[in-house]
Amino acid sequence: MRILIIGASGQLGLELSAVLKGEIIKVYNTKEVQGGYKLDLTNYSAVEDFIIKKRPDVIINTASMTDVDKCEVEREKAFKVNAEAVKHIVRASRVIEAYLIHISTDYVFDGERGLYNEGDLPNPINYYGLSKLLGETYALSYDDSLVVRTSGVFRHKGYPVYVYKTLKEGKEVSAFKGYYSPISARKLAEAISELIQYRKTRILNVAGERISRVDLAMKIKDKFNLVGSIKEVDHVEGWIAKRPFDSSLDISKAKKVLSIDFYSLDENLRYM
Ligand code: NDP
Image (cartoon, rainbow, N blue to C red; front, top):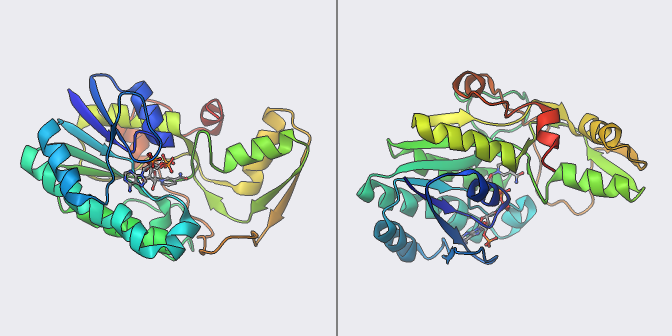
């Protein structure tokens, strides 16, 4: 099977490259990956040409402008990468009849309730969430596509990594009030690798167990015997975009579909 990973230089893309079997075609934009092809998703005709020429059986689109505050300010760019580019990936996927897995986010929800399931109505409160919702909509316009909604992906970056590094230096961690469903890029990649076999379509939540940021920080402190302190805050200096209070995802559907433990915190913290 020939699999195209778009966003191969990102957290999830790097782990997918390590986990997936078969002929892997890797695409990056600014951070070169070995054996990969440079392709800017905002060059739409190049994106369509590339896909049609390479004829992958499966396309996994992990690429995104993921900096939530940057998306709030650079809206045009966020729209191009997170939404409009997906339209062109879909167009090319249709031509070559490829199966498309598109990665989306818990930030499509407003966070007022939490534990959102696949059928819940999105209501983004920031531009990142809105642009990702538009991207999802394009992906779902194609019958042979699966939108994987996830939350708090971490590997070399992400909140758990910030917590670990800060506490290790004996400094104070700011834990923003609220809940989400963090997952390591490795476990998410393993789950996607299994999902490819089932060729599921529509939407599936693949994320970790719901936890508050303050509890997560305390778990990390205990697990790794770290010394720094933790303070719960309701404001983070420098943040521009609004954040949902509880963007946790209901993962009961994925638990039934998948055989692996992609969700438990202990399992996920092994891959920090
Ligand atoms: P990263 O920020 O680690 O990686 C983003 C990837 O997108 C990089 O490979 C980057 O390429 C690529 N990219 C960005 N702009 C372009 C462009 N114009 N053309 C081509 N490629 C581009 O993301 P993650 O791996 O953490 O996230 C994976 C997916 O999960 C994303 O869809 C994200 O929306 C979703 N998600 C992430 C969460 C998180 O906490 N990180 C939470 C919920 C969902 P390069 O670096 O080479 O420029």
